Structure formats: C-alpha cells, structure tokens
Length: 223
Image (tube, rainbow, N blue to C red):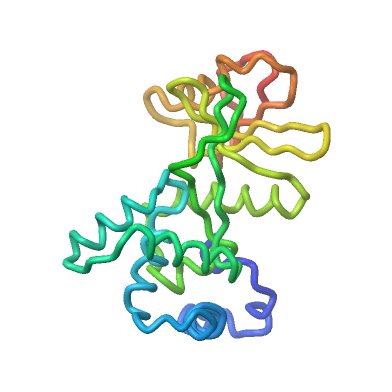
C-alpha cells in the first residue's frame, strides 16, 4: 500500500530512503521523458503541481476547473485547457487511471467530474509523501488496479444521491464494489451497504474493509 508494486523494489534494501529514491527516480524519468520532452513542456513546476494534486486527491471526484482553481489559490494561473492537456499526457504515460462515472438510473456515462487513481500506489510516496489522510484513496486504488489486472472495465456508479465506488464489467459479468478502511463508526456500515439500496439486478455486491471480524449487518446478495 505504501511502496506500491514495482518489482525492482524487491532487489533493494528494505529501507524507506532507498525505496523512496527508487520510486522518485521512476516518477521523474517518466515525467521528464514521456511527458516534458515528448510534448515540449517548459513549465515543469506547473506540471508537477497538477500531478501532485491528482495524487493528493486520489479517489475524489475531480475536474479540470477544480485543479485550475486550486492552482490559482496558490497564486499560479493555469487554464482548464492546459490542465486537461496535462491530465491526458499523464494518462498516455501510464502514470494515472481515469475512472468515469456511470449513472445507474439513466444507464449512461457522465461526461464530467471523473475520478483519478495512480497506476501504482508507490507513486504517491514519490510525489506527496505518506499521509494518513490518503488511506481511503489508497485502498480504492489497490482494488481498482486489481480489477484492471483481471481484465475488468471499471467505472464509478452514481445511484441517485449515492455513489458506488466501482462497477467492474468483463464481458457478461458485472461486479459492484464498495471500499472503506473500516465499517466501525456511527453510520459507516449503513452508508456503505446503503449504496446498493437501489441496485435491482442480481450481480455480486461486495463491501471490502480492513476489518478482521465479521459485521452484523446482513443484506441479501451483499458479501
């Protein structure tokens, strides 16, 4: 979860400064060669600001405008078109995944406000460091990467005023997945299970957490 899954990690001394340097070298090489040199980008600082914003907001609904507004709050101006270009370059360089939202009621993909995840969770350590606040997004990131590795097409489910973390589809299969660090806490279990209240099909529905014990809420069709 912290260091990611690059195989080269396992040939190194398991020491955080060594591992961090390795991850930073991968990130910097990709940013320099696959983005900055390829697209002749001169403002590397601004590019890194956008990439760091995406890493810090992993799993949150994000728009080009929200990134542009954040940069303006830091007294750096960047247009939404430039943000969109930087995001596309990062997608093409396989630094990030874009996950679109799917309206379960209208049965269509929504064109704005996507979510972004890192192609490897270790890249968070290379960009913004290790933060307790990243836990929820990192867990979603790991589940997303696993679903993609198994050949699923993944989207975020919008179900009226509720949201399902992932809808994973592979040929005729469909899988619904909710991800949280823990179901302990007032209203947490009800919220995570309740996301499925209006799902009327019979495809599997999962609630994944780090809890090592069984949970008392039982709903038909939810594991």
